[in-house]
Length: 137
Image 1: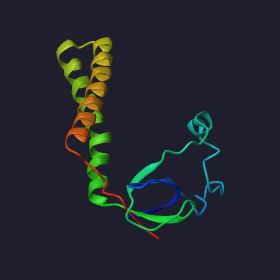
Image 2 (image 1 turned 90 degrees about the vertical axis):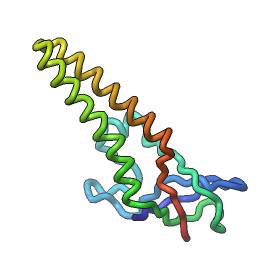
Image 3 (image 1 turned 180 degrees about the vertical axis):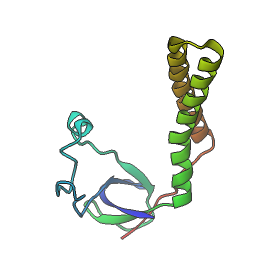
């Protein structure tokens, strides 16, 4: 799978990229940022930089293709999204079954989501899950 990025900064060991969209998304025709999103307006459409090993001759402002492994992306996505959701449902049902109270069920759900986020963060950091991004011109 691949995406496009624009070279923002170059160091001796890393190339820093920002996501680049050369075609409009179809909703309103904008290329950069979504004007309809409340979060987009709130966060002022800031984009994060992606660091990639410097093994290609590029200069600042170049548009490059960013390649990553789909399987690794799916595995990371599962850890980030599914584990907290499964944990939320597990602790919610556990609290509902044993304590049979709406208040305790809500507390169980809140505990479950935070527990799931903690577990997924620990696992992704300790296992060294990385997309192994590569770039090409």
